[in-house]
Image (cartoon, rainbow, N blue to C red; front, side, top):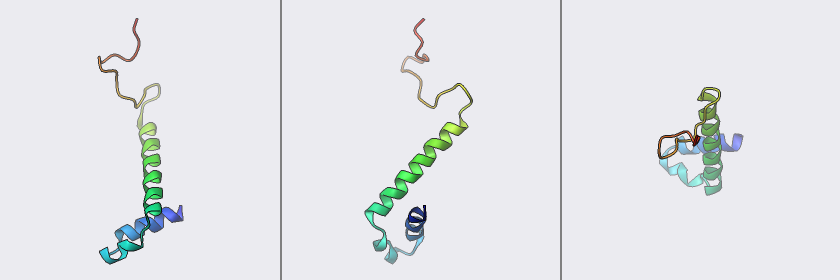
Length: 64
């Protein structure tokens, strides 16, 4: 986790310091943030519903 915090700190630093941020650091940070976003979206969904978009025809996938 501290690795991600180091990357954030470097991103918030003055422009001259951005060269110290490696691509691996940024990839780790992006991966971490995307994972947290997924968990946050799932936590906001009411029970029994899905965060997936509806079918193109507007149906929920049931073809009764």
